[in-house]
Image (cartoon, rainbow, N blue to C red; front, side, top):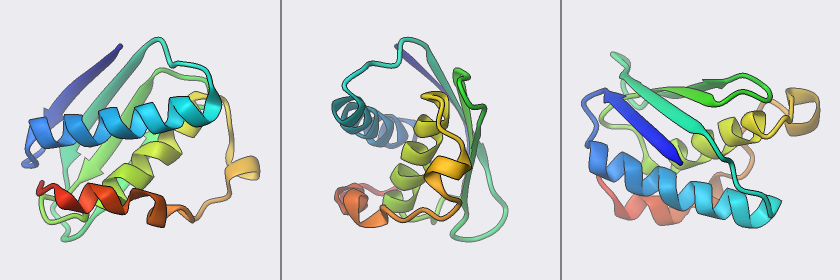
Length: 111
């Protein structure tokens, strides 16, 4: 179950759609559901900004999203943070978001 707390200017319903679809994709790849997940989104004052944080093996994702951010970047960063929730660290993942192209579908949405 995923709980979404949106404190940003981005549309909550759009963020939920992007997060749900990304979570389904992540679950399909990992073949194991995430049982407890809270996503907290705050606003960024900087343009085109998306950033995320999650503890390895934790249950909460914190994201900073500007209203003009690319939805595909939001999805890619969220996917990266889900990997931390699943127990992966940067030694395994790397620090760059290298799978942005997998999330071009998200650009059909407007934040």
